[in-house]
Amino acid sequence: MVDSSSFIELMKSHSSVRKFTEEVIPDEKIRDFIEAGRAAGNWKNFQSYSIIIVKSSETKERIYAAHQVPATKAILGSSHFLVFVGDLNRAEKAVKMHGGTFNLRALSLS
Image 1 (tube, rainbow, N blue to C red):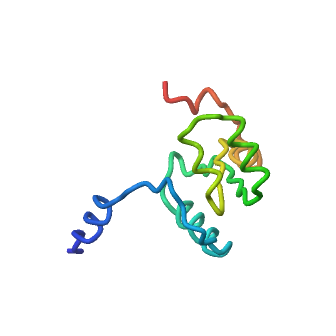
Image 2 (cartoon, rainbow, N blue to C red):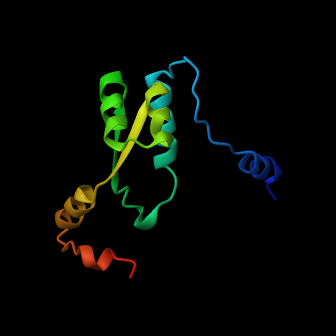
Image 3 (tube, rainbow, N blue to C red):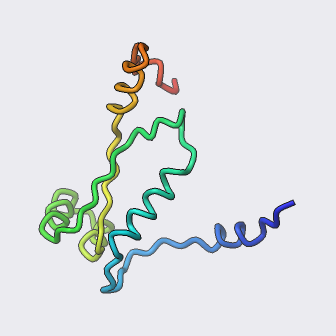
């Protein structure tokens, strides 16, 4: 049997960081983090999202200005800001490529 105690302790010690150092995370590490997240299971394994990596200070300022919520001020101090966008385009293309019919209503949880 695998000892899961270290994993459980890691999960219990989770914290969210809202203040960032000046350290810039290398792009290759960001890609590694994203790929690790994509390897996790998800609903129907659709990977139905796209990730936009924002590094430009100007773009981060525009995103922050559009929200004007104090909690989102952390956007400005991040080296990379990741925007996750729901995207069923790939799923639809895959279904159609295999001769199926893409029915968005069938995907509904209700």
